[in-house]
Structures are given as C-alpha cells and as structure tokens.
Image (cartoon, rainbow, N blue to C red; front, side, top):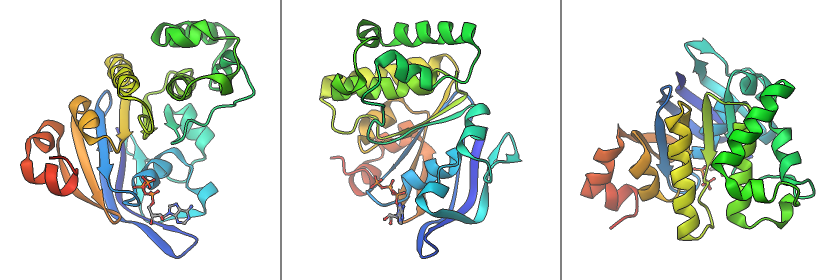
Length: 239
Ligand code: ATP
C-alpha cells in the first residue's frame, strides 16, 4: 500500500500547501482525489512520486510510505523503480520525438520486456500503434494524454498517479480515458486519480477523498460521495 500520513508540506519555506493530510492507495484500487484549484491535490501526488524537490517543496511533518517503509526522501527515479509512476498534468510528452521514442523513454526494463510492454501499450491504445513513427507533437490533445499514460505504463507500474487526465478533452475522449483507467486497474495497477471531473472520477473509483485548503475534509467510499446530495453540492460542485 502507498500512503501519506499527517503530511505537512511547505513551498519555498512559506506556503503551507498541506496541513496534515492522510490518505491511502491500496494495491489494485482506484482512489479519487478531488477538490478545488489550489486545495493541494498535485502536492499530494508530488509527495508520493518524489517530485516535490523540483518545485521547492519540503515535507515538514508526517511521511510517505510504501508497504510501511518510509519513502518520502527518495528521488523520482528510485520511486519509479519501486513501481510508483506519476503522469503530470498537461500531457508532458517529448513533442519532437516519435510516439515510439516517447514510449521508450518510459521503460526501465530489459529489451525483451521492452518489446512486450510496447505491444501491451499499443494494444491498449491502438491509435498510438497507428502513429508509432509520427511525431508526438502532432498528436491531438487526447492522443497526447494517451501517450503520457502509455509512457508511464512502459515500466509496469504498481501504482499510477494521474493528475487531471481529462483536462481540456472532449467528452468522447474523456470517456475513452475513463475506460482505459478502468482497464489498467483491472490488471492490478493501483490508481490515484486527481480530477476536476468529479463525476467521472467517482464513477470508476473505489474510494474518494475531498481536499480543501490543504486538508482532507471527506474520506469515504466513492459511491457514497456520489450519492450524497450535500457532498455533491458543497464539495463537488455538482447539482
Ligand atoms: P490545481 O488543480 O490548481 O493544481 P491543486 O489542488 O493540485 O490545484 P496544488 O497545486 O497542490 O493544488 O497547490 C496547493 C497550494 O500550494 C496552492 O496554494 C498553490 O498556490 C501552492 N503551490 C503549488 N505549487 C507551488 C510552488 N511550486 N511554489 C509555491 N507554491 C506552490
């Protein structure tokens, strides 16, 4: 299990972004992390993947653990080799590289596995297989999101941290991304899903957390959050 406990994070020694956050991502589960802009969701993901440093962020209290071992001090590459992969917001792909070259940058494995993983990713995203020699930057927004997810899958992650994968995409593409997350999870990968699209996230998640001002204010099974009228109105901005 991947977890944060009583986590306090500051940026530049001044901005208190997390004020004692605890949450868990059990193996093989989809966990939704919801909340308004600035609530601290991306900061939770950065804490779990080791990316806080490059944003001048520091863990001031509490910790990050993987199977009970403290991993809050590890670099992103060390966490990636333990199976934790972070897909950043904004589809950060290498625009000048081909689709296949992009996918290869995500692999930490031996050649034989690399081939098998490529085939697996192409099976999941046939559109990437069709464009394998095309330039990443020429893909549509949805295809670039698929490429970003596909790249993370090249290392067979145990946990996938997804930051706003549906942002700016057309409803049909959002549906496709949703189905893909479900499919990835069905093969055993745990998913921590940060989403503005709360309905989509809660429909596929097992559990949901809602954050507000650096704190977790709701921690409940996803179907309960989706069904609760007050939660829908006050925390999720749904009708
Ligand atoms: P969004 O959806 O806008 O990304 P979020 O819920 O993911 O919001 P965070 O990005 O984690 O929230 O931000 C939490 C708080 O930390 C905010 O007040 C934000 O301004 C601040 N913050 C985030 N990144 C940095 C940074 N690199 N330097 C300073 N402050 C930051």
